[in-house]
Image 1 (cartoon, protein in one colour):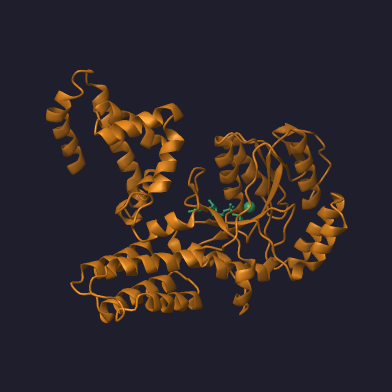
Image 2 (image 1 turned 90 degrees about the vertical axis):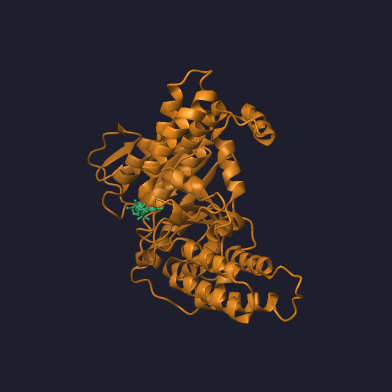
Length: 448
Ligand code: GDP
Ligand code: MG
C-alpha cells in the first residue's frame, strides 16, 4: 500500500503542470490502492471527496505550490481516517493494571501478549502473563514458551497439571478448565507479587458470544466489583469499551490497509463478541490479514463505529518478540507516503544511545564532526535498534520496498563486516587509512 501511494504522489510531483487530470489520476491510484487493501469503501469515498474540496484547483492561484497542498491534504485525510480522536488507555508504572487481550482466534493475541509484556519489561516494568485460554489445546504451552524466552513470569494450567512458573504443584488429579477461575488465580497471585502489568490472554473463541459474556459476568461476581460493574455488563449490548487496539501482522500483504480498515474490522469483531471493558482495560488484537476473519459475518452497522472506535496503540510487524512498534498516526501515515518518520527514528536512537551520550552525539553531528569512531559507535547502536528494515523504513525516501524482508539479514551482516574492518585498524589509522583503503573495500562489498 505504502509503495503504491508514494508512487502515485511521485508521479504527480513529476508532472509539469498539475491540472484536473493529474490530480484525478493520482487520487484514483490512491483510491484503488486503499480499496485493494481492504479499506472500507465509504471511508475511501469520503476521503476522495474531501481532498477534492480542499484542493480546488480553480481557486488556487498560480503561485501556490499545488503539489504540496495536495500532498498535505492526502496526509491529513489519511490521518483523519486513523485518528479516533480519543486518548488511549495508558497503564501507569508501579500501579497495577490488569489487561485482558481479546480478539478472534489466530489474530495474534498470544504472540502479542508477550510482545507487549516484553516491550514494557525493557522499560523497567514488572509484567506477568496469565493464560486463561483453556479452549485451545496447546494454548498454555505456547504462552509458556514465549514467556520463558522473554523471562516473564506466567501462570496457567496445562492439561491436568497445574503449573506456576515451572513449579509443579503436583495436583495431578485436578483438572481446571474454567478460564475465569484461572484468570482470577493468576491475577491475584501477581498482584501479591507487585507486578504492575498483569496481562491475561484469552481464547478469543468466535461464535460463542453468550459463553464469553457469561465468563466475564462470572469473573466480575467473583471479584465482587459490585453492582455498578454488573449493570454495566448487562448493558454491554449497547456499550462497547475497548481500551485500545493492537493491529497485528502488519508485515503481511495488507500492510497499511490493516490499520486503515481497523474501524470496519472492529464492527465485525463486535458482531462476534461485544468487546467489553474488564477492569477498564481491554486490548483487542486485530489482524491486518483479512483471511484470518474466517466466517465472521459482515453487517451493515458501520455507523456505530465512530462511537466505539478505539485508538490503535501498537502494531505487530512479525512473529518475533521485538517486531512490535508503538503506533502513532502521523508518523505512520508519513511512512505510508514515503515521507519518513524522524520522530520514530529519534525515539529509536534514544532507546539505544546511552542518555549521557545523546547531547554529545547531537553536538558532534551538528558540528559536522562525524568521525569514524562515532560511525563505529552508531553502527553498534543501529544493530541494537532492532530489525534493520524497521529502522530504515523510518528514514525519508526509504519505503519498506527498498528493504525487502529477506534482505535484512544481508544488510545486518554487511554492517557487521564494516565493523570488523574497523576493528582491524589502529586508532591513528582510523581516519587516514580508512579513507583510502577501507573505503575501497567497503564499496567493493557494497557492490557485491
Ligand atoms: P491467537 O490465537 O490470537 O492467540 O494467535 P497467535 O498469537 O497464536 O498467532 C497466530 C499466528 O500468527 C502465529 O503463527 C503467530 O506467529 C502469527 N503472528 C502473530 N502476530 C504476528 C505478526 O505481527 N506478524 C506475523 N507475520 N505473524 C504473526
Ligand atoms: Mg492464543
